[in-house]
Length: 203
Length: 387
Image 1 (spheres, rainbow over the protein chains, first blue to last red):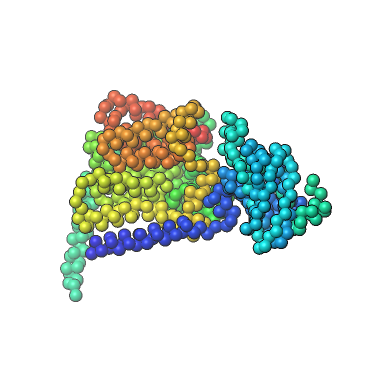
Image 2: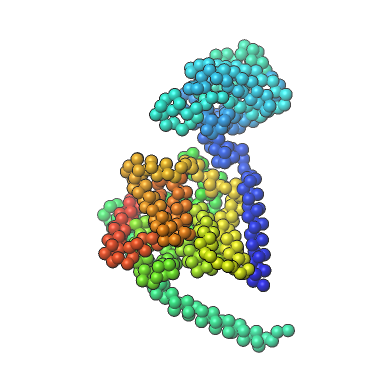
């Protein structure tokens, strides 16, 4: 009798552990929780929001995020000048918008590149579409690329292809981040860049 | 149909038998219980006197035993007060939550608070003290089983005047952790597999590293050349299955509370803890100097003690001590001394090495109590190196 009860308990415990394992594999959390606590792909937990229109863009020198941006990951902490992409957090910096983009989209990025990334490709991606440009300067410079989105996409990614630890160009530097681009401003606007730049005047 | 008179008789004889068992238990363990009670009282008075002295001469904010409830005790207090958070809300960034703190200790404190209608902070401190008393009894019984009755007094003194005994008087989980570990190893020694597994289950609900007792449990089996019967094999398997139960229950609870069964691990991001190579952390501790060097020395002593157990062919203790040092070490070196001095295998090793050498043991005890006094004063005056 005792033996039977023990065996039944073993089976019940095995089933319970299997169920707990299933719970582990299927967290039921928000996107921002997942990014901050589980994937650790962002350094911002519920950052402050500032009112901004799409035409204002994302000003990385401001703490927090514009109201139209839901989340941002793969980007290091805020600094007075802007923010670094950090491939240690996420291979590509990811920007998730409150509303999806579709059709022609102009992406204007003010950025500098650093270390091995200088002169290397940067990929801009949005749900199956991608385009490359070369980051040519270690000073802040505007880059504009056009994307044509066949399907609506809520997110846009910017991926430096040659990020590196600062120790790679500055021996003795113990900064653990994997830096690629210094981000100053990012504008994502509907339409072709040639139409947009005529009216925005971002440079 | 059963005969009601027979049933009544059977019930009566059960009752007599259980009274007899209780009497036997008391007869067998009365020395341990009385010594534990005396040492517990001495430890309490020791902390109280130094607390009063710190308040009177050094301006420490110590008026009652509740004044010792600092730092992590505050986190346990939040669990007793409001339960586990739905959302993180502490620290300047608002990203810290009490999910990192395991439930067994605050659950008992909550029960005590409800039962005695006492303030939660008082209940936490009383609970940790109560578990010190029980831990003393369990440790004395374990040392008796492992080393012999002549080591018991040394064992009690080693625990009651440990350099980090403050944790047992400050609303921390350490004394419950020690109790559960001592019971788990005691039952393991006696090959009471189901009870060992149940104590392991309590251990895994007390601190994350408690789940590592599973390794000791398995190693205990490997170290024995026994031809098990079916009932022994079943009991062993059941014990093994019970050992991680506390952790699994906590994980299931967190899934429904927070949505994340691993929230206790993920919450560590708020403390900036990242997993690294424990040996690199150890070497860096030696290089950095200051308190880090002291922490590194103690971590090395702990690892050396693990090797000592290995040499004495006590594999279960060796494995447990090594992993419970290396895993916290992988996330940083601070806190290592308190982890170490609340590990049963470490204290057992001290008792075995010094317990029968009166002069050496007296010297150890003098230093241990002296360090304990310093750490109590430091604790009550807010010095963070003791945490």
